[in-house]
Length: 416
Picture (cartoon, one colour):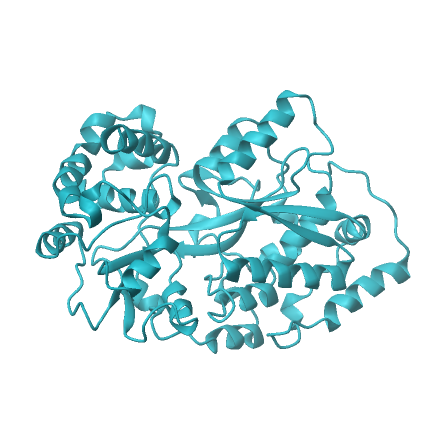
């Protein structure tokens, strides 16, 4: 292990276990047996060291639902483990990565400002390549045993980059498109159909401004479809003929952009900015990386009851988002305990509730006991949420290096 451990008395260990057994969430039934950490002396020592520590959790703060969920989690880990969890709301995770890199360059190898970072894709690859990650640690967490990489390979492969125990899976995501049945009867289910749809409805289609995550994902969705899932996309971009591989995308966007909202001269800052445009009827289609988002927006009165979601016939891009611990984190023990709790069946169940967040779970139903499995099966999907069967198999993400390259080329072509 990479940290010093303080011995705890048997009584203290038992108190920790009892607190875990009897704590309940405000939205969930009591913990089942499968949610209780396994008996593990090393883990009990980690729990002891974690007590009293403060964890600074750097996470995107643009969603009130997500912020509320993290606040709930903070209450839970305080009651269970005596850990103070503080969310540091960030706009761009890349800024946090840059800060950690600056700390390393300044020789601040302990006492860092970040204890947990919500991360995936190119940000993970950057941290991994620069030696900014603590671990491997994920497979040592008790609740990792509910993860099945065979069933969900993106839990161990992040945008083509092997995870290697350096980040813990937190939630699943898949691109879905949003429309209002009152205005659109047959939504376009392919890149080609979208172009024709935009031509028939000029000014009423748009997408988020890259490098917004959903905006960049939309570019990758188009490229996968238009290139026929070119195998080069799943290798580092510097191994490919970038101009040749991406040519179909730029031809497509050159034709699409004049048909877009505000003639493609202005783009919404992020996918959340699409919601009021769709609700006002200014645009006819929106998109999100959370399959439950539209149902939540309907419940919150942000979208009409007639709104629904769909995916393209060939599938849509999907991935896993993760939690990681920087190499110089001040509270490594408590960070591991928090992450383990966030992977627990109770925390994942609460997060999957569309009235809470609606973020799909990383857990494998085949690994859970019957009681936990039943709780997940009884979760309401929401009126606009596609079933797992309707979502189909997600298209794999291109290698993370393609995101940066696509964003740079897009900016060069369409923002100068």
